[in-house]
Image 1 (cartoon, one colour):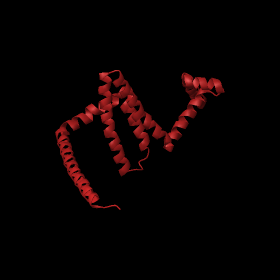
Image 2: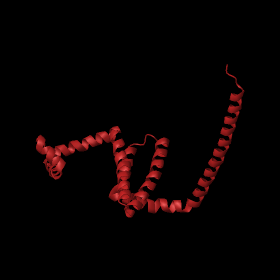
Image 3: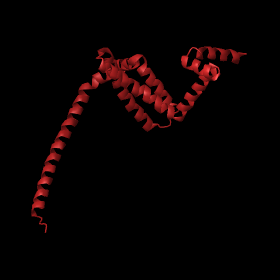
Image 4: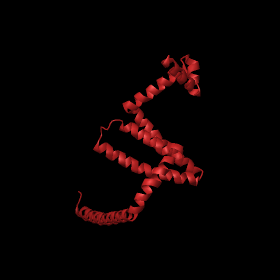
Length: 187
């Protein structure tokens, strides 16, 4: 009797969803069974890795990219600030994710945890990311900002020096090649 009551509740819940109700009416299969089938399919896809790839792609990148597009198109400054905070958090999250995958590639349910974290970050138009940005990233980076800027400036200056040196070498190679070519006689 308990199973029957649970199935009735699941069916009642499922039939409130237009997609499931439509599928149930077309197939004659109770909506509760369709819902359970969909949940099992999603779990199998998540477990197999295929679903986690697509879930992360949509939750962590495509949906936020679309929000960014909308914010830019309509000059929505409030959303631009929120989504900017999201992308900042996501940059650090992806870097952390890659390091964890490299150090401990076999953590059970790691991809599922990543999906849950991505959902939390983007939920309510990036409200989760705003919280992480304001409580973790802003205070930490605020303290390190001048050091990071100094290191980046040093790297940029070093690259520019090397680039100038490479340009000098390239000019010398061209000059030498021209001299050699002028001395070679073709018959």
